[in-house]
Length: 340
Image (cartoon, rainbow, N blue to C red):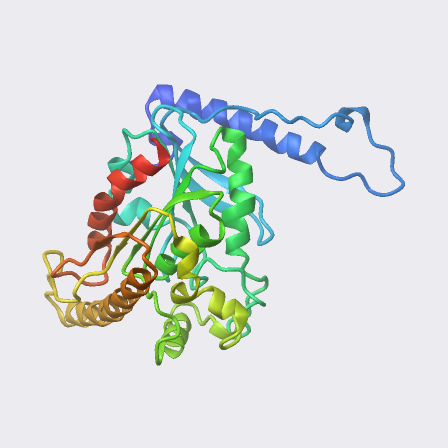
């Protein structure tokens, strides 16, 4: 699969060029909408704000957008709904999220999977070790210059921006794996007006289990030297707010898909070197944590009488091909919830 406008057919290049001009117009409109400094005279051009969308969702195709945020511009990869519909599927990355591409776009066939569906794939780039949360302060162990505000970005700044492309801010589904599994559930739990469906694949869903906070600490130090205490103080309201076991009651009535594999090597595990054996063993250990905590979370939802669709494959480790399969299993439910 090719990415970017240069590899697109001529018709797509034309649409891309049109979208480029529209994006410039959108930026110009945003500049005009900036508040006028006290004591200055507002020019006539900004006297009447423009409320209508600049344009509707492009039908099909792929774009990379730079979206303004309190963290600075955030790159977002977008595959537009096939028929220009208003539904969106937010695909969140894992703990080692890169700064150039969202791994759903190159580790899986997600774009091909939804290529003929009337839903826009929204793939934010970045957020390593962020848990897609609003942090208390910048991480003090790696010299971070700004404070992560990912929940604000994903539930306000990004959907507000995409309304200019005809994407409804009230017709989203969200899916995440590993780090972003609990994040997907949290975003949906606290922003029910935005999300109609949530999926968690191999997520640690019991944050207050013995040793879990320290396990998360070690993971974050290994992935970018981020400090979990900068995200939320131990056992603080902010920490408890991120624990699926705590916010579980707020998921009532939300369609959900929740999965974790057994941690036994499966069809995608073929280690043929010492490094491969180490990586597979590591993926088995992490998936075991995810599997145990996911079963605990299922028991929590069962005790509350909250239904969800579950999948616990007999084999599988903490790896992208297994999450690709789980996204495929969740696809029908996602499209139904979004009427896409």
